[in-house]
Image 1 (cartoon, rainbow, N blue to C red):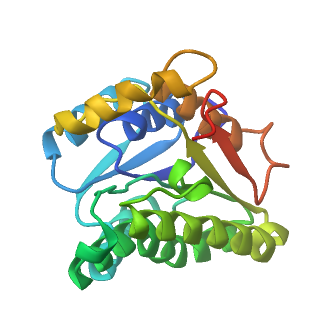
Image 2: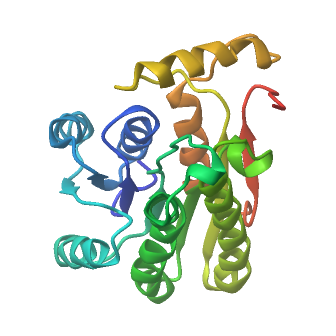
Length: 247
């Protein structure tokens, strides 16, 4: 229970990797604010599972890529818990579309959710972290940030941007007791409504040297380490958790 008394905000926290992170931090004693874009039932179920560890939770259904929505979520969160000590920017979308077919709307939607959201949340929750002299920010990149993929230009641009934001925040706020890191997951055994996405994930097993997909709990375990007492010297890093996959 080393995070007892602290509060975490996890975007995309209702399912898959986000859900595993919520439960990991709750098991360590943190209260958790769970954001989801639309699936309130999943977020509510995850909240109930987290509360079994004796912590408090709060669910916010909102578009994390909308600055006004983030401001409203933050106001409600700070009124309830006073501060957010741990910020996990996990939510993302990964549409695939040829570059010359992209519309401005296509581009902006991805940039807002996959990149701007990390700016909105950090700008909102950092002041209280600075006041308390302690904070943990964990951003998510992915293999799109390491390699880039055809058909996913806005995703790759966004994830490269997140990595840049991480390095900048790490240097600026490290002296204030706040660490900022990025996790870059490889193919993870997750369930999606889009069957094409499920098939794509399963098809990547052959590219992973360890011969299997990763599990959400393995990503969540790293989050727990970074937020715990043994992870305080990790700052400004990108942790690639991908079983050795290179493509």
